[in-house]
Length: 630
Image 1: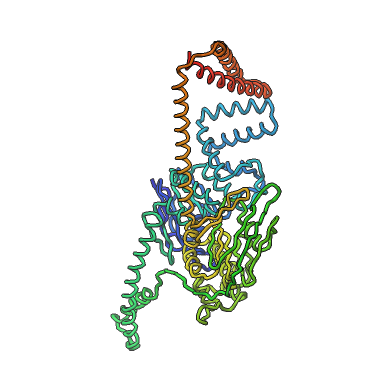
Image 2: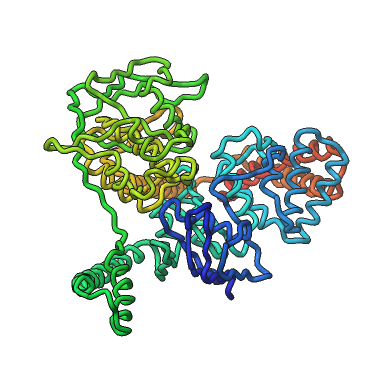
């Protein structure tokens, strides 16, 4: 079943061609990743397919009987709504029923009344009839995994990251036929991303995905569509397969380019020898010459950067933490943390959202003070700090001016220099765009430019807080190449596991409650170590269980020889009577609860039933123990 069929789609923004003649087809169950540079219209293309925007030309058909869920890169939730209302913005009758049930449940907890109790019972009956409990269980799992628990909180009080998670939860809860997801891993910690990978890999929904997370793409998708220089290329397979086939395509392109350049050279010589008067045959060859010229001057699109930047000398004292503590009231971020950075260290920081990773960076920068302890920074240290928020760029300036305001050039090894214009080219800003205004850049392009202004300051200690957010995969490859050559210290907070695996040598794990673990290795090493630890713990628990069972069996073997005492016989007989009475009380209370009553009665009966069940279990266990010797 074909969900989406798009042919020859084109779109202009102002005077810029975003994409041209793009073909996309998405079928039932298909999971597709869309890969392209920032600024080439990925988000606009998704909006067209979702029916929010309209292409300038081309044919776009959507199956009339499918539902589409679209996660935008920049969320747009109603500010006056609650979290619960934002999640259930749908016409799906089952989800509307669950919304009514959850709303009634919350109101009953806050202001209990007989009317709400009656309404809740009616909604529970409807949930039974509609088979909505499975939906409700899935919804609770989604909200729990994405750490959404304050359902009555107004959307206006939420951070950008919280809004993105709520928008994602809304789509997952609705379970549409087609999910269109624009950077779904932004603002998720690594634990959430790994859960989302598993969830999307199992879902029956078709998926069209834009993401910079290469592990995420690799585990979810079965097709890659790449937009490169206005053309679309399809690869049937995951990200690893795409890399392999793209390399083969570029190899073939290089061979064709070599042939085209040789032919162009011969044809250019012929053109220069020809007289002004042309025969019909010559004119045909002239027309062909311009086609050859176009092929000979095409670019393959491979980018890598090896700069060998001359960083300022860094002394033996770099960055030291002397028994640092940091807390906000009872909430501990760091407790007695001691560490001394060494030259050329590359450290990754991992931890769930809210464990204090960004606070840790702000303490280094002096924007936050430790509660106790001391942070010492060496005199030769020159820090470059890339933040995940507050990108301060002047929209009224041109791209080249923004970089030149920092420095005209950057110093390389062996006395060489690299100009601002040349560095812009290395980071995928072609000369044709250097005089564009910052205001026309996409979100990812602005992040790339902001990062470039930090690198132009030539720091010897780089701190990168979520540098991969909103960057395209081509830019990430360039950035990784640059950082691999970087000869200073590197401190990275990122949820991009591929990026971290490639660049860091050991990790600070923020485990919560003030504990920071220093782990030697990259993120994959850490996950393997954790898996090994869990396996060892499970084996130890199994061994303890076996020992305990053996002791129990040994005790039973030796105790079979003894007889019950007179007191134990009387206890055994009385237990039978008491168990019968408790069973009757249990049945009576269950009947009362089934018939219903006012709120206070239901609470009293429920508490009484809990007490009866505990006593029944205790006395039954004792009866079984004594029955061994009767």
